[in-house]
Amino acid sequence: MSFINAQWWIIPLILTFFSGMLCPAMGTVLITHKRLLQVNLISHSVLPGLALAVALGVHPSIGGVISGLFGALFAESLTNKRSDHYEAVMNTVLAGAIGLGVLLIPLLGVKIDLEAVLFGDLLTANLGDLLRILIAFLIFICLMICGYDKLVHVGLDPEGAAASGINVSFLNLALGFTTSLVIVSSMSAVGVILVIALLSTPTLLGLNKATSLWVAMARSSMFGLVISSIGFLMAVIFNLSPGPLISVLCVASLVFLPVKK
Image 1 (cartoon, rainbow, N blue to C red):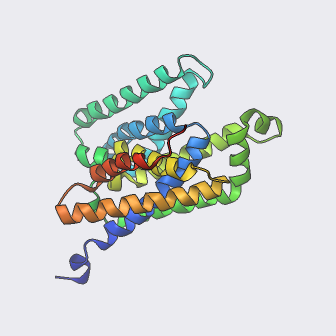
Image 2: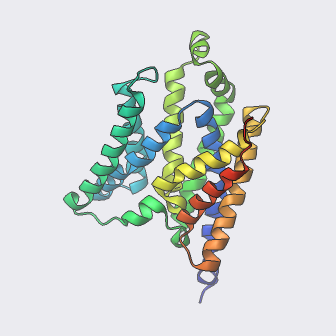
Image 3: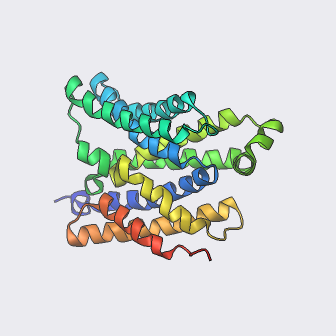
C-alpha cells in the first residue's frame, strides 16, 4: 500500500480545516450584509448547474458556480429587499431550483451522487476537491484585501455607500460570485444543503461583542475550525457521515449563544 493510500485521511482533514475557516468567514460578511437568505438560495441553485455541466462535459464546479449565481440574480430581479414578498419569492425560487436540479438528472441521463452533493462525502475527498477549496480561499482573501473598507461601508449603510460613489451592485455581484464559489468548493465537506449551518452558527458565535468585521471573521473561523475538526474526528471514530455530523454539531453549538436579557 502506498503512502498516499495509507494516509487517506490527510486530504479530507486539510479540506475540513479550510472549509471550517472559510465558510464562517464568508458567513460573517453575508450576515452583516443581511444576505443569508440569498446564500440558502445559492446553495439550492447549484444542483441544476451541476447536472447541465456533467451533461455538456464541463467540470461540475463551473456549472455549479454559474447556476448558483444565476439563481440569486434571477430571484433578486423579481423583487427587492424592501418588497413585502421578498422572502416568499426567494423561498419559491429556492424550492424550484432544487426541484429543477432533481428533474434534470434523469432527463439528461447523467450520473450524479445526489446524496454526496446535498450532504457531502468528505471521506472520499481528493486533490481536486482540495484545489477548489484553496482557489475559493484565495479569491475570498483577494476580495477582503481589495474591498474590505467598501464591504464594511455597504454593510453598515448601503444607501450612504452608494451615495459616496461605491458601486454597490458590482460589489454585491462579486460577493455573490465568491459565495457561490465557496459553497461549491465546500460541497464535498458538508454538501450544498448543510453548508448553511457552517456559514451561520460559527458566525453567530464570532459576531458576539466583536469590535470590527475582521475580528468577527477571525473569531468565526476559529469556531468553525473547532466544530469541523471535532465533526471530522467523530466521523472517523464512529464511522459516521461527516457532513451531517458537522451540521448537528453546529446546532448543538447554538447553546453557547448569549441570551439577551
